[in-house]
Image (cartoon, rainbow, N blue to C red):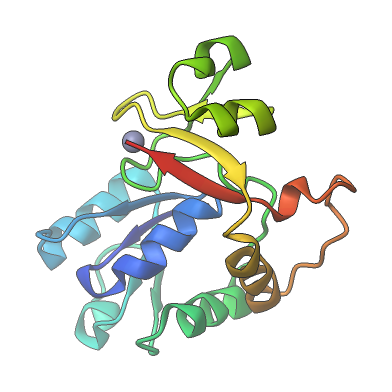
Length: 169
Ligand SMILES: [Zn+2]
């Protein structure tokens, strides 16, 4: 599933990227551009704009009514089978899949305590941000799971799936 998201749903776009979904979002796209991109790339268009949603052109559109991202995600999960299988595999800023970075390579790129405590690192091929799983997003993650109705059974037993993502610029 790939998405394109209108300007009013920026936070939802960010969370879809955190979940690993290919999600296009830009502040200055016109409605026609959104519709055309959705059609050309087979993306589901998520919109908070009823008029846009009602337009006949384009393919799959979903109207999102809430103005809170949590509710928006919940709305979406009611109509689409969202999951957390690919959590933290995509750059939140650039929307590109992260490349794996070896521990050795990561050594000079992340703070020493991160290097010492983390095993897996990913890097955005576009902006170069390094991602890893830390601990402060545990709450957010648990919340996302709750919102989209996914349990904890896929955890690896040592809490790593509960981890957060941290960003180094
Ligand atoms: Zn990036």
